[in-house]
Length: 184
Image (cartoon, rainbow, N blue to C red; front, side, top):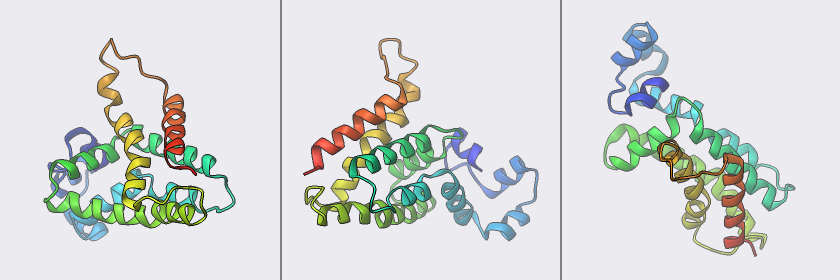
């Protein structure tokens, strides 16, 4: 399923296509996952950075800058690794905001991200380390720059005039920019 999502996007990923790719029966997929939506959720669980992000923000004794840099490295890994499930699913959700499967997966994961990273950011606001800004905007300001960079990086790397920094440098630049923008 992950390979199909990465290669073709979300729409062509049917249980029949997954069964053919995995050399198993559609019935075994129904038995294991209950249906396409649960299969997609589980694939995204495996390839998304949610669990790693939850761990990254779980230690209240880690310094703000260190946590932000770790979050950026985790996001870079998730959006850069093959198969490119996270970018494909995010793109699908943004391209078709009213369609069921992508929206169900995105809603589930956005809620989880707000519960993890969002609660951590809210705690940093309460502690006075981050400016008091609306939580959705803080989350977007944190995640969007590195997410967009890593999603479009493969396309930009084919353009000779564009000299991209390595991913570690990009993480550092974006994390430092976030900290300058929101840290008190």
